[in-house]
Image (cartoon, rainbow, N blue to C red):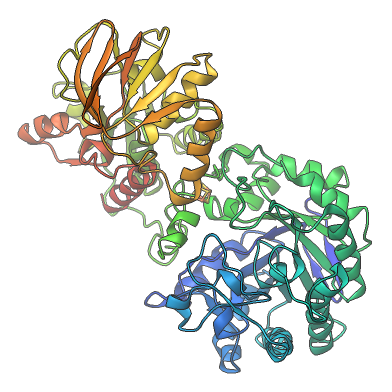
Length: 640
Ligand code: SF4
């Protein structure tokens, strides 16, 4: 019954209705046309669904501290008026909202802010080309003041609390860590001097907001940076923050430049919870656990075991704004789970696009993606139960159509069935479970083990047909490709052929990397990826590609780029590399070198005169990924 999760918690004069906080996320809607309206719609959608406390994206306390274009700001008096409609809308929807006070420090970009980034010491971050300017003592005092002024503005704008951003390697964290703070004045050197900055901010913020207003501090529980703050110092900092007037400690993990994944799918669920639990033992104020908590049952368990007082979930609210409502109503199997892929949220932000979610394209598009009942109820046939077809079927059924979805395989999920068996990607099971439940709930007829051709009776019965027949693997043009020792990646993932001995994979993109990892897990130790280009992992998003390649290297999987293929024989692969010809002995050669669209059924149905649409890989293979496929599905489902 989630009794711990749904028990209220009081911070100063404010009572939150439950223990779940929607963690801060930069969604980037602010900079778009109608940005404020879109942002309000985004937060209201979630406020209506039982979130205990929403924390906004980081709002810059000063122009040089901004995270970039389209980031929120609270640096000016006129920002009070700008944010008031947001707080009012969230309150009207029954929610509570805190503003996050943010300063990027050396993570800020000169090109975006027009000013040099500033930091405790002039040490460049490995993920930013701009060297920061060292803050002088006047800058330090001025910045502390900007946090306090901003907190006061947030209170006037109607926010229910503020969260001081002191983790993830941003300015405050840069002052705390000996790696980034090399100052010799009272703001650097000893640990006491390094924490002087966060404590001065916390005290002045408290003074400016008064005794009744909750102040949250997001502190780093673990920097994951060599020679940074020690565990002991972290515990001392937590105690000092409590004494400086902080009401709630939200525990962050890792810096943006950490070489250890902290929120990707590869990180086991709830992996960092004990860090928060440890801090909780040292303070008497409540503590929030975060990072890779995506299951409501796990959240309840963490609270029940006393490891934390609140749970912060961020991306799970992109994937499903109704996660808490569904939990409350015991409809957990209907939850659209965040699979921690980062593909449409963080990767978008790094590309300066607004955030959405691969499994929920409605996220960030709340104003336009409403479900309207169809004017005329039709019989819709969806051919192909991969991600594109499943989403099309779901949305068409929600709009009142009678929908049948057919697939030649024995199960739904399409290529997600490959992903889900790759080590570290089992979260894809959740998306398949979600769609299975949705089809059931929406009474979509699901017909598996059925190949549809133009003469199939289902085609006759359909008013409109959506072909979502997916892709076909591209066959590279190499003599000898028809040798018995050559398989496609589909053969391997579907286990329709056996892989033996030394393995050569032709291809180095996302699928080839997944394949290598899958085979390694199956016990194959001699695996090499070959490709023409020298960049491996193409197509994998920026936030996860580095970890994928690092993982393959750790597993001893070789990657050879810049290769020209000559021929394949029963003994292996003949290549040329740096103008030298080489024989690569391989017992099994697997092609994973791209995909081609599969539009043949669409054309045949069109010729027959049927009203037919084509989505996902059936229409385009280039640039196709799960995000594009599901987006296509949602669009067609909304338009028919
Ligand atoms: Fe989660 Fe992926 Fe959606 Fe981001 S895009 S919210 S990581 S499912």
